[in-house]
Length: 237
Image (cartoon, rainbow, N blue to C red; front, side, top):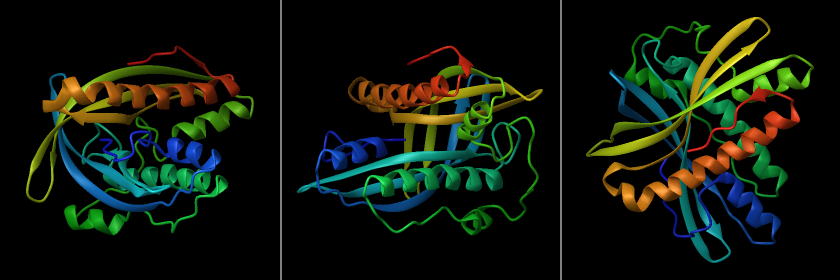
């Protein structure tokens, strides 16, 4: 996810909530993109669709805009299928809407549409892949642990070069990805989350902010792991 904001303090949903709690007047609206991206992960090269939500509005008198990646879907088994990715993205998005509403930031709830994917894919296999964890999110495993079940999570971090394909241009991006390998209830699941990204050509300037954003998101997730007594090793970029 690329963070571009006219307000330097706003790069995450968490930042919006924090400023609202400090008494700032915050407005927010969303728009969506489903972008085809060519990834190069080690020797593997594959195309996926990245589900991006753009957040924009005002904090006081200053405008802000940033984007967040909610899921990545593939037509093969290298990541969740595009049909699953739509539902995974919407579950994470719903959680953010709830967090914003609790902080007093109300906005119209819109979601990613599977119909948009049907334009790109004529045939979708709606089955669930047990290797990628189906439509479960990381917070489902946190709930499983909170119910008293043993959960172990291995967190691997990687910076993956990619090319985003928009209507009239291509952008070379580097994605900061977290790979979660989860063992619980006699089953092993694996999936990835994009924590941040930056324009590859502007690495010297943009990478430090992207790494900071990714690590802040990891720190919040690790706090949830600690509360749920999930076994893991802290890794940061």
